[in-house]
Length: 389
Image (cartoon, rainbow, N blue to C red):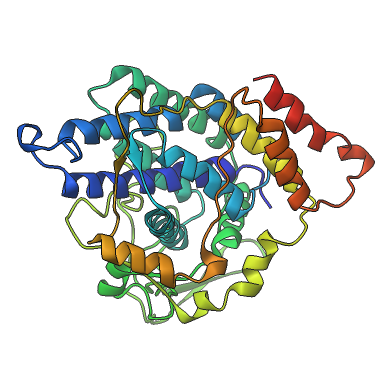
């Protein structure tokens, strides 16, 4: 497992979340002068995007994120995105949040699978950040936050070896391996089968720095080429013209990670047969987990750095529906398998008098095994940390 995979996972999933929210907010927005009080306007859309991006690229948040660490459970990560999605006046109910998370995870899983070489995951991340910068191009303060994260990525990942990127890729694929949610865009484009598994192409550009398959070279003991043999391949391969830019600005060449919702298309998610039988895998999030208290520590540090915007005064949160109608949303909530729905716990990083009791209850429900001497006391650190915020 790589200790450097978490920032790439978070930033790419966050980028996909912003693509989806922007598309749905645009679809539901109407001109400001015609809007009623409970309807979205373009001003509301920009405000929501700005608030979420500001929170997502919070300096303290990024500092915690970039510390070398293993990936945390799907539920722990999902908690962060639930809080992030509600960092503005926008509100999503459980079914829409489930759908949003499904779309995010399946899109990035497909991108990781298609990367020609492991290092290209960094280009995918840059594509997401380039698009995020376009969302907030009129907000120089937020742009500076995103650029600072860009510089951190270049500093941390620019010198990693091909082997280290391969380990990052394998870590990400292990995270996604049991997720087979069918997405209408992928089904229509025939890149996903009816069971939710992706169809990988056997043609296209080869990784940068490699040659098109079809030639075998033989050498003697002195290293001199003595013979060539050609063979035919089933794929139609091409050599890339140039490598994508790993700088702050530049042509990434690779299109993975760009906004696939820029062309208006209806997006639906469906539970595949394999996903419906995930109860045994989902139980890993319920069974005692020696890392559970450490995960809560991590979330407490992360959430403590977030500046969550609450609707103030008479302002109420606008509800965003990721389904075509309210009836579809309600039906999705009723038919989603229980083991695949996330019971999100909102941990408020404040001096709430009831906070200690609530966190103690959560930690007790996790039934964590006795810690080893090396990790003794970490569970108690959570309450002390939250009391000090």
